[in-house]
Length: 90
Image (cartoon, rainbow, N blue to C red; front, side, top):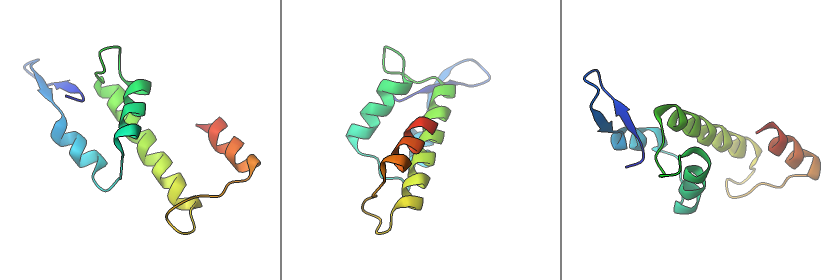
């Protein structure tokens, strides 16, 4: 289970369908998912709802940055200056 949320009766519910809806259309490898879990999850590899939202915003943002920088949809060539600006602003 990637994350859980509380409904009004305070019962935990999995967000798997929400996750599918959020990342649908974004290609995310297992390696990227593992990196996202390492960065945003707690020590038991569970995400709070707030961390899940942060993670999805980050994923959407970096996807848009890539789409804006790529010329062929496969890769990106960056100068050292462009690389530093992107890394330091993230």
